[in-house]
Image (tube, rainbow, N blue to C red; front, side, top):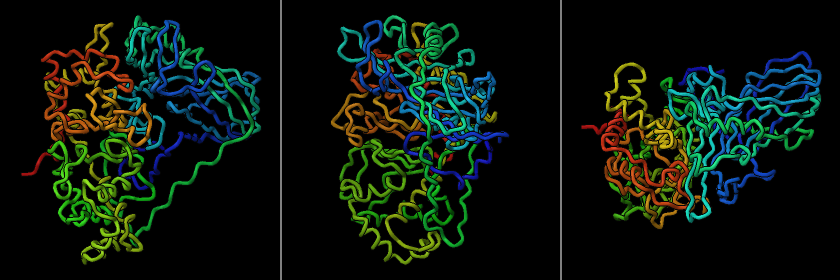
Length: 585
């Protein structure tokens, strides 16, 4: 059910951390067969695609790698040996770079001769409200990151990576975004299946075949599928023959685990009311920590509690200040005036994130809130001492008893309460939101800034844009991913410090641009004091490196925006400020 009752959060289950498994429930057939499992993968020359590996070569002697190959599959159908077509209109899949398994249960007991599907949604779905889908639905923009313009359609297929000509030392980037209704194509693959048995079918997309006959240097390193764009036209032709069946077998897959049950519920739990605007996608909230009035209240008190620090002088609110929970200092100060390694990120709209900190080292919000307590540059306290101090404060035991059935004061319940509180920190009432609802109108300058923000810069087609939406698109104005955005590096390796991968060097978490005018300074180390400095960074040549994000590396000279356009872009960014986030007098 794709309901719009956005306040019904407590029934939502957390998203899987591994490969995505999508199960579609179909109408009951008169004769049942077993389930069909489609294992989607990506390859080159018949071998599994190695991500971020600059080793592949095209027909133009250009070496290339893939950092992203994400796409949407819809309109599935099966053709039987007798020629009957079994339409599966409700089956939809999002295929991420790492691949996925799509499970289709309760199919009729037929012998199948072909599997068909379309790349991209149909016209009606493509232009419907993307916020209507449940938290883990493949068309939810927070799941697929393929719906950047919150009022436009989906990207059907995103191909992003790096390329290097024979004479080049450092690679440049390419970003091919295949989209638009006229480009929706049907893929049909012959196969021999007996649906009386549970079966698995491997379907592989060869990225090299998808890119066949294209030269990044000659044909261009970008496309957003503008009408008449020859790059998009070539992709459309190539994709038809880029798929193959790479194996079939009898048998199924392990059943996905049941969502975890709520932890330590109080005797009379009362849900905390949350309402989202209709244009905001539903988040996947933790099913084991439902948002309760009592836990939110306890979490807020703990967030502002200086007893969490060794000196009893520093609280979470010391570095996450004001309504945006941000820090006006480039580096936050911990106990004894110790200077932190990074700038403190603003804290709002966290329910849509799946990893935390600039380097993503915390997989959950509940894990994140405990780390600063023990960090020697921040609170420098042990969890054991924190528990002892909280227990000794007579105001806390009644609050823990109201929030948890056991009433226990321990690190887990402290983290669950603070997670509850932070999940309620929402901001969706900016001038842009109100203009979307028809309550106000943007100025001409702000409209120009919006146009630049959501426009792909494609000089070969005479288009000049700011290209912001690739990392900051959609209604959240962030993809919640990690990117190397071309800053001059320091000894801070970013995501690589958490993953240990050289391909993650200098990648940092992408912050939301909501309230961006209220949360200076900017970047992970607070190096830019103003929005003007931020725009100048992207407008100039980036620091080239092997991990530079493809959407920035494709413009090695920078965006080249005029002064007028830079001012318009900043004017638009200021429309993302929520009045309730303004400093209180």
